[in-house]
Image 1 (cartoon, rainbow, N blue to C red):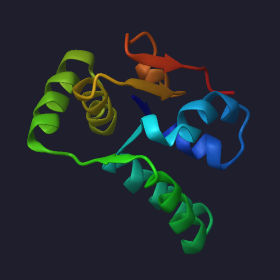
Image 2: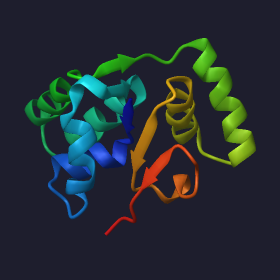
Image 3: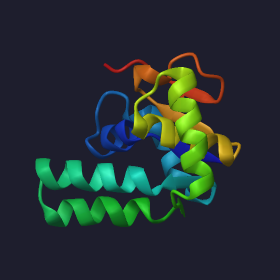
Length: 124
């Protein structure tokens, strides 16, 4: 199972220099899980940067994966991760979701660099 961090979704949608890195997990929707937090962050960013239609298109693409809602179990795990790894709230929630699903997290967010279940590429 794969999870792509918000920055990966945005890189892919913008056809940025690292879009190729995120193409494999994003296009394999049968093995893609999407935390609701990522849907929120991507929709908001695209809405601000582009327009409502583009934001809705982005959200519709994201909904092709399996949507994972933030529940109490993930929230508690995220709080522990935040303290242990000194990660911000959103990063902690995404990592907790990844660990709950025994998935791989794809990202270019340096906060995740060096964490076992993370496939990281440096932002260009």
